[in-house]
Image (cartoon, rainbow, N blue to C red; front, side, top):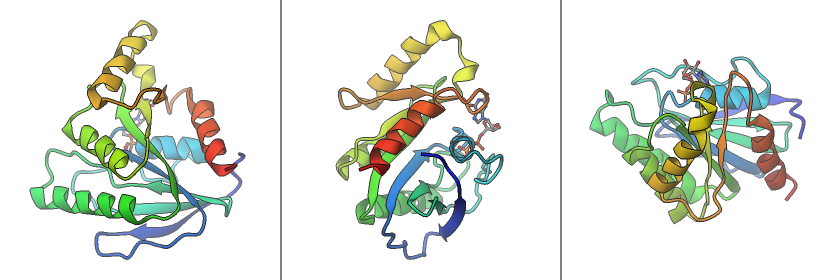
Length: 195
Ligand code: GDP
């Protein structure tokens, strides 16, 4: 798929009613600072369309990007900032849970984890929620330019083990600096899009 048009169509806060879209949705989840905005921008070939460098305490929203008038990229709120209050964490959980439960057109979830760090309790929870709602997330291991080539296989194995992924789950190393991994991610998007 060649991305020709991008439009941030809907921004949902905690009290917003989620849109009932009639086109396929592909969601992106991950901890704050994991590189989610950078990945979405790289996929869309935009420099800074999705917001980057999330701040703790910034408004948590679900953003729906209409791509080519044919599908949506859904940017789920980043999680796991130590500084946010318990109340905010609870709201975040409700938003994501509500979205996963109610979207009728969600077809694919990408779960982003930083290749350098072992997934934490929030990552595991996010993975388990996806499974609970019938999605088998594809894992993207971000910032792969920050680790040595020789370390990669070991780190990927650790990510798989910690998340306890379903057998055969892809873990795609990605770098927003070099764009390595982008083509592979686009192949999965194409598979969903082409039905
Ligand atoms: P978000 O909070 O998940 O949306 O994360 P951002 O996309 O805003 O990225 C957080 C920080 O990590 C920023 O300083 C980015 O420049 C940096 N970053 C994101 N992706 C990469 C990457 O692939 N490689 C490196 N080296 N830095 C990255």
